Image (cartoon, rainbow, N blue to C red; front, side, top):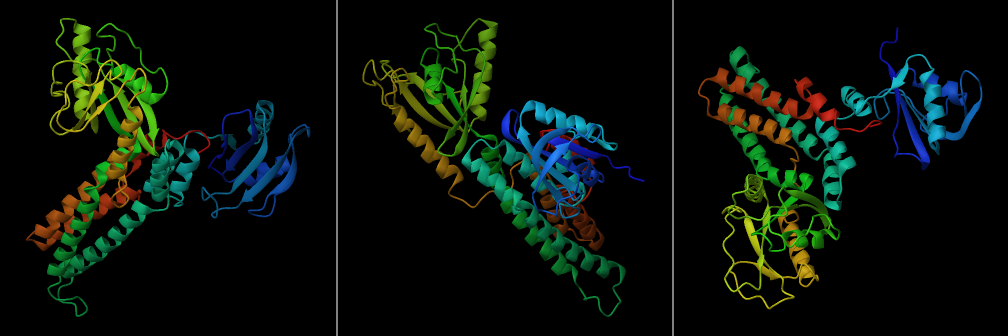
Length: 442
């Protein structure tokens, strides 16, 4: 008795389009393909077919049909694919025909990928990488997601887990069968040494975790400074569009405005913040508070001041000492910049564009130095960082534990944490959160 439903969905872009791809996965995928195309093609070979409504026999479209019998398919199940013309009416007629076949239903968001995970075709790190690849906006994001798709983190985690299992087996044998001839005598020092070595390897990976997460989420650049310095004009100039309202009146920007840019292949989130000053207006006070908070959390602050002002620019208190800050002397088209601040600074005209190319070139170099100088980051998500941190903590306790039983227990906890990373154990609580971000048809 078949209990698993067969699912179908549009797996290509929004219609109308030249071609639309409809995927079908589940135990009745072959039946559905026979009903519409008349027969099954040879596995993994495209077949020309006239698709017909299984009830009326009326032609729907001329298409290509492909057949991927499980388990050698993307989902691990029997899978069919229809490549039809991408008009809305053609897609609707094909869906209507599929809906009339018993045992078929439309797929939910991420259901194809979830079935691939449940059938062992993907681990959780590759599932997350697939979501990142679909959502990649820049070249460097694409490269990072593709490396993860190929098992950059999952493969390393599995190697760690196998070493952990071997150490745990040795510890368990030492504890339970100390008198057996084939059990090495005094094996626990070697077990503790392996735990310490694994902890060091994982700690080295965690040291680069923030870099991978920043590349995935975008490098945050906050534009901050006093009112009427030209922050919104600078945002619009860098974004090459009117993203923020520009006004001669101070306090126009009240909330934080985000613009996503691609600078030389690197993702950048540009943040336009409210002018920082003392104010009696409660709304402006909230805008200033948010501006200070976002500047303090940014990866880089562009502190914009009136470059023609006769006094030196004040220090950007909003940025905080931990955030690198560049001073932007704006309005260079009116007068030569009067002050010469310490640190890195640029004279620009956000109105005319003077000096903007130099600023963008400097930003591109800063991004390349931040992301491109080191080895590719293995960790790209907070969930991955958390599970690896749990494993490293357990391994540290195992290496330091005096009692053999405590060593074995901490090794079990470390192995379980690595299992959560790839989805081998105890992941039901995170599956919904991961798959709900997928689009229908993936």
